[in-house]
Figure 1 (tube, rainbow, N blue to C red):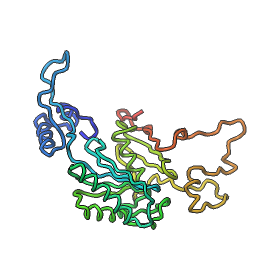
Figure 2: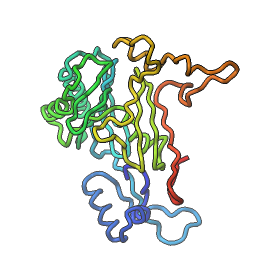
Figure 3: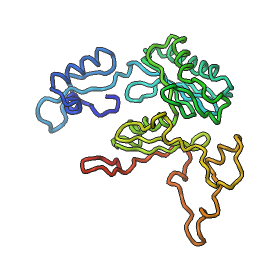
Figure 4: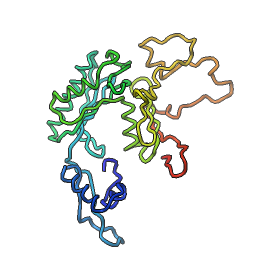
Length: 293
């Protein structure tokens, strides 16, 4: 239901690989929880034969999750319903202080205000952080574009602020590009693909994330595809912290890497428009796999 692949009970039965009775019981339970609506008497399509299957739809008044993002220019809080529908949003374009607890407190306060306004039930909260987030500790390892200290326990701080605001459900924190890749895989450019490569050049610097066989690939410590600040010319001048963002997006080529005269300059497939570029990755699996192309 969340990804939109089961618009009817018949499709839900096939997707789950269960009997009609079991699928009916699942649909009834989801309806009782206020998550979906079940239309047991849908109109038959023109030319169709037999009784049409019950139609299923996300309940537009159902529960929501609090989604928040912090970046160098401020933060944004939003309420998101089942199916990825944005119910309400509150931008917070403020100067991000050096105290992560203060910033995350403001983020949660904005989300709590949206919940009070909407009257919706919240079932959990998630934070997208502009830093590699170590697993399983949940610490921000390198918030280069924020003045936060390296190793700040952002997951713990966010969870504490969520509980203090009286918001129910689990609280999760992850790297912003990793979470963007999951969203694109489930609802956007990579929908239906097994593998997805996501490259982000949004606010500052370059980030990457990879979905393999439908799962986010984070590596043993949550740092996979943290391309970050790579050395391009070992003999070039060292980049200062202030220049790190610029050097990640506009690295200096070493003499050996410059294109030869007459050869076309290399182009990035995402260079035409800054932001996030997500492309289903080609697969080399045996027949029966989907490439999403």
